[in-house]
Length: 361
View 1 (cartoon, rainbow, N blue to C red):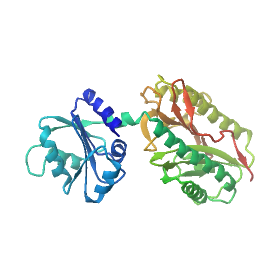
View 2: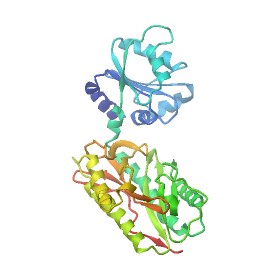
View 3: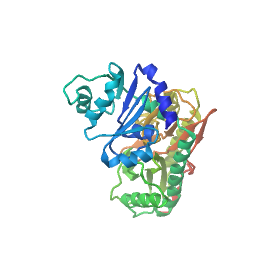
View 4: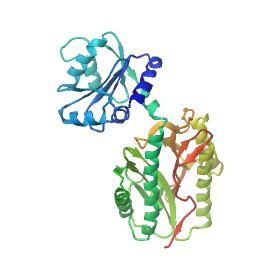
């Protein structure tokens, strides 16, 4: 973690701060290694402190050895005591993770005295560091992706008419956990027939039926890191129109993948795939961004492939490429891979076939 601490300190100058209080749960884990639910990291130019309560002292000792451990009974009283030595300095706080009540506690010490430091709202500083994955992080993401790939191969044998969406979702979860996953990355999406027109459909008691697309969007967590993949299959024999629509989404997805390379702006990758769907007359039926970053969180801002994605791609960034077409009353098709930006392009982490799979009815 020392390398991450130094990288964060290097960012203080541009942010015009002398330290940062890290309270967001995922950012806290990234900066310290601590996986518990209570605690905050105070990182200044001079020291790195981890503050937590009695319940997590031993865990913090083991997981955050690069930090000086400070136990508290009253977190804000203890924090203000430690900040006294920084009187007059500018200390950042994560404005996107701090509530109004928490901010009041930061600005108003329990003893009624004015805060010793100037609190400065900062957004995205740790997330910027998280956007470029280390080799170790890439290996953990790949392990999570590999579990999801195996889950897709497994579930194909269970996609039969009469099986319900809920049953399929449960089988996916059980399989991934039996493979060693510690959790789902998000609630699995199993959407058949008309339900596929809902990009974030939740599994229902609807049985799978012949003549329908089935969209499967799922992932797992492996040692803290997430995977996310989507495949759409067909039950029975698709019509020519079904095949054309599937090939359209696949062509857009492949074009999006091919557009990923260092120096490209994320929104231009989105446009590459989006234009293909729009030119085919289905632009109004693709209403979400092309993809998102992934790592410790299943949805991360870097890189965000959308019409507003302004991030310039760099090696080590990992994101999803997942265009879709959603037709109300009929169904939907989405295809998703995770890719990592490399020095000269990108590498696809997801290995499952993207060719249309037609299952027996």
